[in-house]
Image (tube, rainbow, N blue to C red; front, side, top):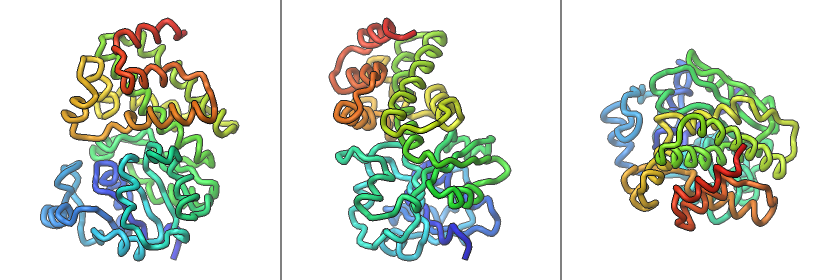
Length: 333
């Protein structure tokens, strides 16, 4: 068999569905697919598509082996493609008894493992004993909704073993997906987490009716903040203006498909955090990431992060968005 072998998509949401679509664009590809709810699998088999997310994508179900038992799914797979929201990762893994130390982990999760304040790669290395050379991460800029529409998209695969990164990248390449590789696993994981926080900031400013001029300054400062933090956490000669860093930030902050921008816009318009969560009916990972990164930075790195601090103050300290963003605006250049 050629690496990657027996790939299993872990999750039933929009990003998991988009990942499955990309993998199955190869006409020879077959995948395993784990979904926690057996009822979702039954509906999928009946209708030939995910009945809850990205419903316009048709699938050949004869090329998919579905599992609702995580242990059977893991036992019958070699590469696990994680595509669950970061706040729910531990819940999804709660029933996992199968040893995964010999599996290859490809994380599509854009957030920190809550309570642990660890990157997903760190979590699987320390808790599940997966060696770092068998852990990779996948990042955009790439919205699931645009994958569904087959709009041209770009992915970066990060792994300390670049040959494995290349093999993974080939699995995703198709007529509308271009790929590149890097070994900056930790930097990309942190940048992917931070961009959700900054998208909330952009949304808050949009809700407060700040214009495009201010948004440009906000995001210019956000990418500088990302660079300061990633360099403090994992110093490396990374080019912060590459698409996996700057591009992913821009699309998450500006796109109509961005949950985090939508969440922030609602906060800026006066919604409470609780009401915004209820009305969205989807996870804005930046909300959880804000608290995690704030705690990590205060404990370990002490980087100057005024935008992060402003979002934290609005979401967790209940400071008025208009007051907080006005104070933030005075520090931006």
